[in-house]
Length: 303
Ligand SMILES: NC(=O)c1ccc[n+]([C@@H]2O[C@H](COP(=O)([O-])OP(=O)(O)OC[C@H]3O[C@@H](n4cnc5c(N)ncnc54)[C@H](O)[C@@H]3O)[C@@H](O)[C@H]2O)c1
Image (cartoon, rainbow, N blue to C red; front, side, top):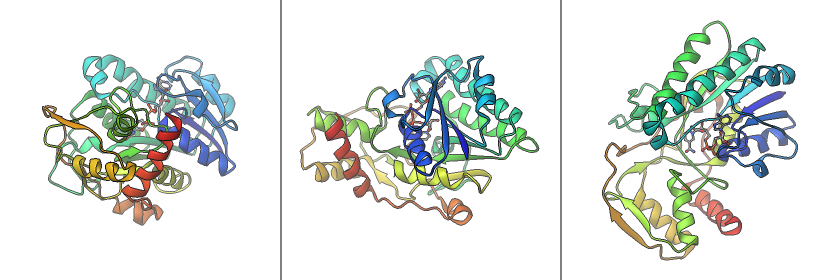
């Protein structure tokens, strides 16, 4: 198949591209390299360095004429989205619509959007299934939810689509800088012997999922299942659990200190992924220890 991956030079996107190439698909990556890296893009994929808002997008998509589009390109920094909601909407709404519009015009068979579990906010419905509340707490999350709504409206008769609400993803190539994933920050701090600051009591929980499990889920949607799906492990781990696991794996005594909790930070998060289990026969394979070992090894070698 001919597959277009926006954001394919980023953390999750570059792993997805590796798998699609391995499965002998023809892959075009569109990425402006704002957070992604050229050297992460598989040499057998074609990279077009382009903003998804660029006028030339129409020609690029038409010339490639993809069968399937994976849309991962995003402004994903929550703080930036609060400080500059216009910038966030430009990428996450207008840029997304630009890709979706081209996908419709080029009669793409399936549009797969990477969304987030952040949509559920703080809820007692744990582990949360797809009927959980919609409680966006930042423009970034609001725009992910809004784009899902565009898909459900335009998807009624124009295009087949799936939106995958990912839990907290970690693994090799994740950027430890800025507002990064906590596991990337923890591993970077261990390697650089820096103190890790725990926001609040450290009892906040997340559903941490290894990137290879995410790629497996994403690729399972190529030719089956439509609509909204959670992708998580169903295992709820606190930040303190995570720190203990990382200390054990790295055999180092990570220095930690507490600071004030972040106002508005979600206290507990964990996904029920039963629906994807039934519809595409997917389930996470890596437990936290295995995933952390692989990620730690990569951080030690690469950084
Ligand atoms: N990492 C997670 O835990 C997580 C969880 C839920 C959802 N997601 C979603 O998964 C997707 C990928 O996230 P990631 O963690 O790999 O982040 P990432 O920053 O590594 O990847 C995003 C990619 O999009 C590119 N990009 C950004 N703006 C662009 C634009 N205007 N035009 C073209 N390319 C642009 C970046 O250069 C980067 O390569 C995002 O949509 C994110 O919202 C991530």
